[in-house]
Image 1 (cartoon, rainbow, N blue to C red):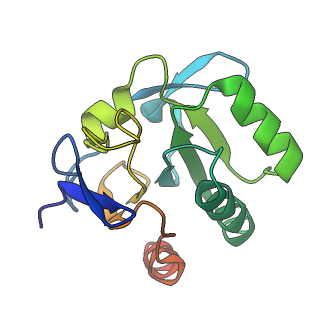
Image 2 (image 1 turned 90 degrees about the horizontal axis):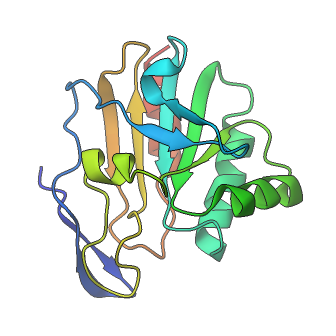
Image 3 (image 1 turned 30 degrees about the horizontal axis):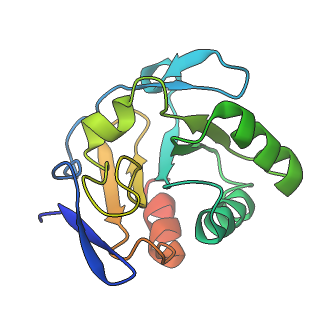
Amino acid sequence: MKLTSVTFKGTQVKLKGNLPKVSTEAEDFTYVKNDLTEQSLYDLEDKIKVIIAVPSLDTSVCATETRKFNENLAKKDLIAIVISKDLPFAQKRFCETEGIKNMMVVSDFRYNDFSEYYNTEMMDGPLKGLSARAVIILDAKNIVKYVELVPEITSEPDYTKILAAIDALK
């Protein structure tokens, strides 16, 4: 399945490349936490991981998506990571304002590792340089088990499918 483009308000936007394939090992990547320290995916404990890539928390769709995942994943034994290129200061403020406590909200601004390795970077269009909206689920051994690239940037992901994919791993 080729996942190399999305649309933004109906206009095609090219992505850096194909998103990871199911059953492959996830690439490690370094991100910046709200306290400006760095961590990598492989530093996290052996749990299911849900990586939620968003263009910017400063948009209504990204904010809504983050709030919904915060609520829907609260009682699940997993690690949820929302990643964008927003600065950690803005992410921290967003989390405090919105009560986001059940997931990590991290930044790809410093190294661009996530966008680079997972090919979610938009290569043209008005949001060029930001990540497309995608959800990638990894098992406890960092094997990709589910990939959803949201075809229209201004739309939310399919929460029902994502939650079912998570439940299928337990």
